[in-house]
Length: 276
Ligand SMILES: *[C@@H]1O[C@H](CO)[C@@H](O)[C@H](O)[C@H]1NC(C)=O
Ligand SMILES: *[C@@H]1O[C@H](CO)[C@@H](O)[C@H](O)[C@H]1NC(C)=O
Ligand SMILES: *[C@@H]1O[C@H](CO)[C@@H](O)[C@H](O)[C@H]1NC(C)=O
Ligand SMILES: *[C@@H]1O[C@H](CO)[C@@H](O)[C@H](O)[C@H]1NC(C)=O
Ligand SMILES: *[C@@H]1O[C@H](CO)[C@@H](O)[C@H](O)[C@H]1NC(C)=O
Ligand SMILES: *[C@@H]1O[C@H](CO)[C@@H](O)[C@H](O)[C@H]1NC(C)=O
Ligand SMILES: *[C@@H]1O[C@H](CO)[C@@H](O)[C@H](O)[C@H]1NC(C)=O
Image (cartoon, rainbow, N blue to C red; front, side, top):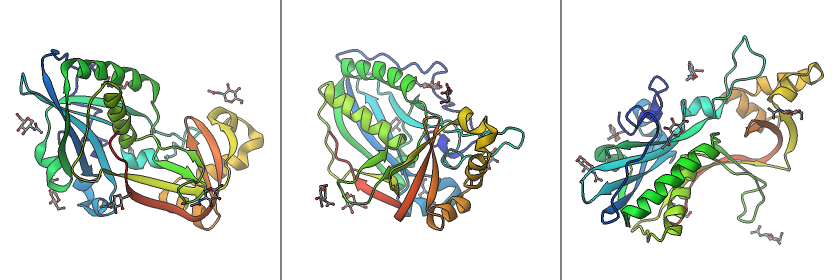
């Protein structure tokens, strides 16, 4: 299951990566190939149903010309995607437990079959060892700054110039940040095919700030709100809230927001984000 450990909550985070998250040093004379990797999410559990829906997982691959060693770099939730999209309730604790923590995982090997058979494995460029090392340093910094996982992108409407209330923060965003960093370091990246990525949109009017965990769940006066939020905490109930009650409670970066939902409520798209 190398390269697909995001599928299993039972598996530890990044099992084959360096325990300290270290990335090997490359000589400047080396030529490192860069690969775009994409595969359907949950394919092991649900076949390629989610692949047909174009819910994809993205990663970046590297291969050293000097050593012949290749590597996979991906960013994913520390727990299962489902758990990180909808929180679950620990009966003994008042505030719901959100496991929306994400982090970067760098490990040796590219599982060609896994990525190419139902997804994408495409070389998109070459970089020098120095560019690779500079990128590696940036990955360490990036890994310390963005630590929450967010599936939803919240917009005011589907039109292109809609207001974006909340941007998602997930594996494909990490891949885009990596490509932008590589471009900034002077890399030339190109793909022969359209580079599409999954986006999950919620549509809402202007969000209202509700407070953080302790502010909401620590005060008796806000008990109704706390109960409302508990209610919205499952896929079906979330759907009912979104479509029937036209409201959604978003947890973003450890804070709660109320979204006055509006049609078309939820959309899953697979849209092009060109390489930088
Ligand atoms: C990123 O952070 C996680 C969690 O702190 C850690 O396990 C992982 O090794 C780090 N990855 C890299 C590439 O530094
Ligand atoms: C994820 O959610 C399932 C079902 O709610 C639960 O059984 C499982 O323990 C959760 N996994 C983690 C890592 O919290
Ligand atoms: C990565 O390395 C493995 C083992 O050497 C090899 O089978 C595979 O083809 C390589 N993949 C890429 C994309 O370089
Ligand atoms: C590709 O999809 C097919 C059909 O769902 C599945 O049987 C196969 O295991 C998948 N291949 C890989 C490498 O995941
Ligand atoms: C974009 O915004 C402008 C100004 O707010 C508006 O007039 C225009 O209709 C919008 N375009 C689309 C495609 O919604
Ligand atoms: C939560 O919000 C309260 C009230 O606004 C504030 O005093 C507290 O510092 C916040 N806690 C955290 C962990 O941000
Ligand atoms: C990729 O994205 C473009 C533009 O966003 C879209 O027109 C195209 O249909 C998408 N391709 C697939 C396979 O969904």
